[in-house]
Amino acid sequence: MKIIFYGTREYDHYYFDVLAADPDYGCEIKFLAANLDADTAPLARGGDAVCAFVNADCSAPVLECLAKNGIRLLLLRCAGFNNVDLAAADRLGMTVLRVPGYSPEAVAEHAMALALAANRRICKAYVKVRNNNFSLDGLLGYNLYGSSAGIVGTGRIGAAMARICHGFGMTVLAYDQYQNPALENIVRYVGLEELLRGSDLISLHCPLTAETHHMIGEKTLPLIRDSAILVNTSRGGLIDTGALIAALRRGKFAGVGLDVYEDENGQVFEDFSNEVLQNEVVPILTSFPNVVVTSHQAFFTRTALQSIAITTMENARAFARGEPLVNQLHAN
Image (cartoon, rainbow, N blue to C red; front, top):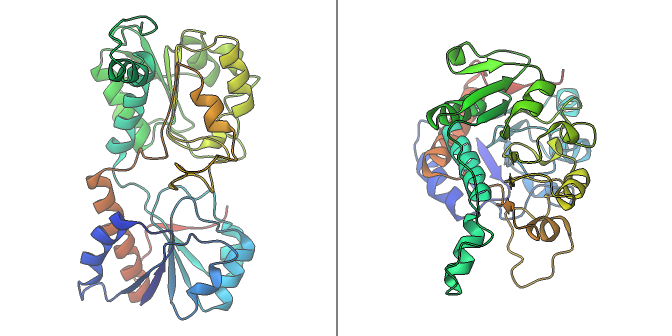
């Protein structure tokens, strides 16, 4: 099987080259730095499968172009799939496989790092010290120990975050349509409104769907304590950015930590250090002293990358051999 990899970086080579050399996988990989979109889809001609990341354009027109060029398999080297038109894939007879769980602890640890950095003003403190300013003005935080954490979504990542918060000595509330039995002695499941009202730290770990889009917005922001910390390492669309910025301007939140944000496509994973950003969202968010923004890096650990590579290649091998596809996605 020949797989065309889109949007690749040096670290992708490091983990996938070793596996591609293993004859048991029987794969040939062509790496493309260009991301997948309508303009680059024809580059897949001659391949059997395409491998894309979370920021790829997998809309119906793109999938149709891939199908015309002989692509039968779309491999997602990520867990999220809100960027994929699954109905179009089913219609075209294209199999879609993902990596549902690579290292939930990697994302959860980053979520807590964002919470701590926002709460204790770590970024601001670092800049102050770099400028030989050792005063503590503007750096006051509060103890997480003894406070309450609200975990929205208790799948693998949310469960890992719940365990971290429990380890910090926090009371852990949780909201999910499906309760995780593994968390029986750690969390107390409540409704979303009760969670938002009663949490000092709110961490989002749910997929982006029509139901969860802007779940943190004009209607729900007033429910949250002004002294709370809000963290999002899932999908930017869970939070209404405009409403969040308006709330921040009113002095809401002790801290906000965002690894994802709306309209990040076209910007995330790219280097614009010598350019003027056309997207105004990040400059506005980072103008607030209590906001920390990172570039969709919560997954980015050695353990996670190795797991992503192995699962992606095992998905490809299972497809080639006609074996059961445990990680296949279908339209609802």
